[in-house]
Image 1 (tube, rainbow, N blue to C red):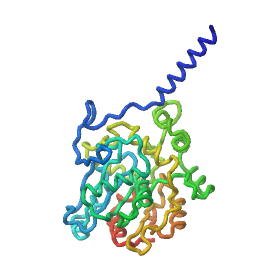
Image 2: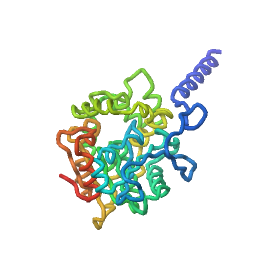
Image 3: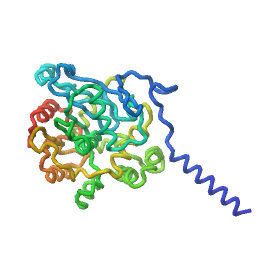
Image 4: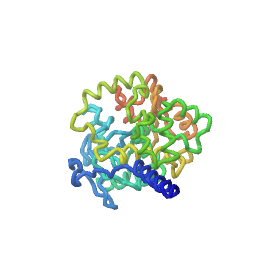
Length: 348
């Protein structure tokens, strides 16, 4: 009798635990009860939709075409490069930019089987459906930098150039020295260290970990001020005033799991390749790979970026003194980043 009761309780506990770690289904745009479709979208080969937004000169007039990949908890509306250039500079450079919602973000359909490679192939298909030509530039900010690494691995032949802006680091890349990686990892808030451990070692628990109330969850998701430099905090205040209320909450409107949590699982999980093993995609200097960092970035350790740039000598490394994670929003910064990419030159 007692054995049967114990067994029933154990089964009930397992069933409860299983339910607790399961995320709710996403509220897909255009579906009953889901957010409305307001964006321009393309339909991918597998039937998913990718939402996008165009900036700069028209595609037909453009001399340079760029695909921008947004960061964590952002969307197609967050494009800090071409949107911050003066109309005169946009015309002079003849630059066109398209930003898109990564799968599960904004109005792009979720991709439950998303991988590093699938994101690169999504970018390639976006370029082809929009008619951007045989070669285009790709830029990724913060978590969007993962997509740039993926493009350098899987579609380097399609790139005219690439820029990594404060790209998030996966501390478990095999090519990173263990002591350097550990030192940088320990600079993160303890709650973020735990969130990253869960994402890497127990990805099936990411939703539960970031929604439970027993322990502090990701400090990045909750925008803990300690994660931002003094310059970053000033920019966050300015951006809050400028931000259109219409786009507030758009990034995660289909649910946090297929946007934020999926990003964490992929970004900090086990990668299909090690970026430190990549070859120079531009051996004849026909393009360049730029890496930009703020010296005082508290979200992405600058020490690891310096190591990567030293190890991959073909990367042009640019470090901005006194700047934090949001350095792209500083006056004149977007123009410097764009010109360096188009010219193929960096600024040490």
